[in-house]
Length: 90
Image (cartoon, rainbow, N blue to C red):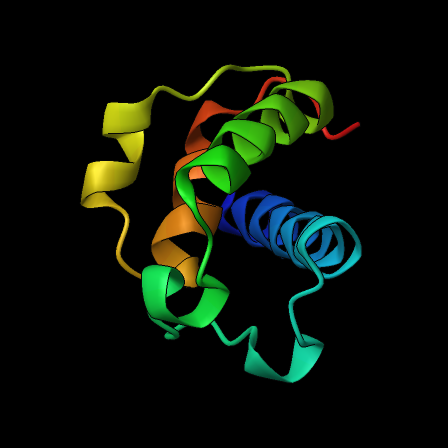
């Protein structure tokens, strides 16, 4: 995969993730910066994370497990994780 293609995929993933965070979880779009701490920025409870897993499965074609979130600190980490695991871009 070329670097340009990887960059395009990552850009599309981040746009899709940001869109569902704003639409489904009412996150203020101004706080969605790649280096933002995911837990502090999103302030989601455990049920929200369950909903997020379902949305990711529907949009990107793979299922996250609870332990997958343990190594995700920033939104950029989240985007990269999804880009590495996705099988479709909805």
